[in-house]
Structures are given as structure tokens and as C-alpha cells.
Length: 427
Ligand code: SF4
Image 1 (cartoon, rainbow, N blue to C red):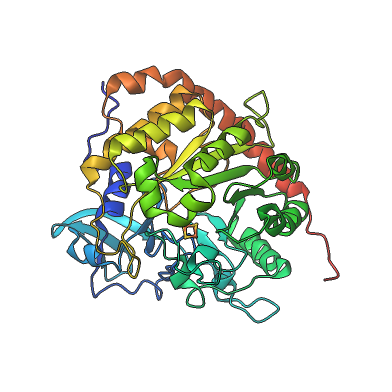
Image 2: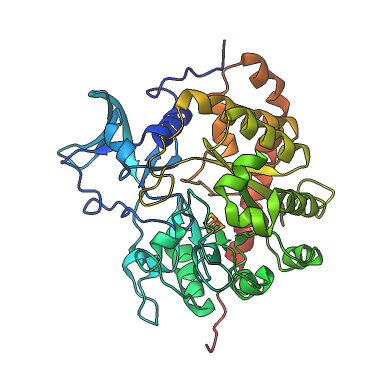
């Protein structure tokens, strides 16, 4: 019997998630998302998320475009039933039932400094995302930068002061981390930095990472531009960071220069690729460990030809890095707001290749507990998009290996968290 799941949004949640990224949805007037406990539509600082957070059975988190112009043309419409549940319709016909991602109580709580906690960090799926420092300098005009050099798809500079605080102290961030751990059961905190002229990124990140690791033992990741000094990557690893991620977004050098002018001038595509190579070389020899070190290369599919995205996936996985791939979203207010999002059919081979290559290179996908990401297709979710039985058959042994790793890692990690108690701090 075939284990291929047809690309039908009624039966294939992976395909539905991808289709929702590409087409968005319309909100029927019956929807009362926030009154029903859903999360508000926030422009997350990653510059990619501006949508409605939903959960698809059997547990795929998705941030669905809902406010951009293209979403108003979507075949998908969300409707509320009289008893407060939510159904997704496609072309006017029932498609599937969905759930609102629950809005945690701490979203409405204040830090001890009086700031709303949701403006310090936000849940992106089931993990906490924090953008700790000021606005990325590629957005800032100055004597040294007469014209902005921001990435053309990015909305970070549009969000500050709207959905986000300008500065976030370590203590404020830790208050939110503890609240999110206590009330939302997070296992992972992700720190995201933009570019800062003349800054050492390790210095920006270190105080936050150190405190989170010391006080919680949670998994911690950082998204950062390449460091100026290679030895700093080993210091990052020594701090206990579990994931380091480099956002080069596109693999085509010309597209990179055109869409990421600041990154191209300061680091160059090669700078990002070198950073990935350096960090994968720091991975422990044995693949299985309770203290993981994962290297990601971040891509935006739909900004370049699908073949180029697949070439990037090949390049990364051959070196032991896991691609993190999101779908281009023409965010309102950005320089690419008038571009069309990619067609779902063009994206299916990209994401099917993502699963295939991760399995081929025996990368540890889907092992960590409770990291369900709403802004990207997780590599393990891309198995739903594989339409070739031979590919699925070829990776059965690796699927069993990953299941065994999950069965060991998850309870061991949770037991480690339970053994910790929050220390009392004078500050
Ligand atoms: S580096 Fe580019 S994508 Fe990242 S925050 Fe700055 S402008 Fe946005």
C-alpha cells in the first residue's frame, strides 16, 4: 500500500500548511479570534510573520497571511461556528476544522518595569522568540549610511514601537522567559539579531544567553549575522547555545545582492556560507547528545528560482547544516509588497527536497521536544509533500533512527528541566 499522501488540503495537513503560506486566508465576519482566546495578529520582528496563528491537525502550527492584499483573494476563508469553533472553507466548501493557537495569559501581563510581556517576546508556534537589541542598522540612515540598506522583503524597521519595545533589558527578557516556561511549557528560546554597525554580536547576545541557560536550562538558539572573529563561534558554543542560524535567504548571488544590499556589502554571501561551514565543524563527533549543537541556514523560498533554493538545501545538508525554509510573504509596507507570493505548485518540490536531503544526510530533524514552528515548514513536516514512494521507502531506516532518538532525548531533556529550580536573584 502506498504511503504517499495526495496533495489535497482536506487530507494532507503539510500541503494545507504550505498552501496557506502561499495563498493566505480571509476572515469571515463571524470570526472573533481574540475573544475566543486566539493570538492577536502581531508583526513579529523576524519581519516575516504578520498573520493569524492556527493549529492544523495533527499539530502543525502555521502563521497564515491574513492582512496582505493577496490574502484577500484567497480561496480559503475562516468561519466561526455558533459554538465557538473554527472551520476552514475552500472555494466556499468546508475543507477542515482548525484550532486557534491559544493566547497565553502572560501575553497580557506586565513586566516589573510596566511593559506588556508580549512586546518583549512572542510565541512563534510553541517557542519563544525574542529580538533583544535595537532596530537593525540597515534600516537606519546615518552619516555612514546615507540610504537605507535593509533587505527588500523585511519589515523589521516598520514594526518597532508598534508591536515591539525599543530596548529590552536582560531582566525583562528573563521575566518573560520564566512566564512562558511556567505557563506555556516552552522548551526553546530563540534570540534574533539584525546588523549593528561596529558591534560584536556575541557581546549583544551573551548576557541574555548566559542568564537563560543558567536559570532555566532551556534550549537556546541565536540568529545572527556572521561574526567578525571565528573563535567567537566556539565561545558561543561554550555558552551552551544549542542552535546557531545564519539568514542568507537566497543562494543566487545576483538575487542576494539585489534583495539584501546591506548584507551583500558588509558580509557577502560567502561570509554567510563560511560561517555555516565554520559552525558545522564545531559539531560533536557523535550525532546524538543531550546538549545539541545545530547549525541552520535560513532561506526564503519564492524569492529566487526553485532550483536555486534546492541547490542551497543541497549545499547546507551536505555540510551537516539543517535548512530553515520559509515562504516569501510580500508584507504590507515593504519594498516587495506588490510582488506575488510564490505558487504552491512551485514550492512543493523545494520542500519535498528539504525532507529528502535531511534524511539522506541523517540530520537530527524533529528530535527536540515541543518545538513546533509557525513561520516555517519544519523539515519533518515536509514528509507530507513527498510524492514518490521510492523516496519514502529509501528513508524508512532513518525514520526509525529518528524515532529512537526522540524516545531517548525528549524524556531525558524534560527530566533535566524538572530537576532545576528557579534561583532567586537579587536584581
Ligand atoms: S539583516 Fe535584513 S532581514 Fe535582517 S533585520 Fe536587517 S534588514 Fe531585516
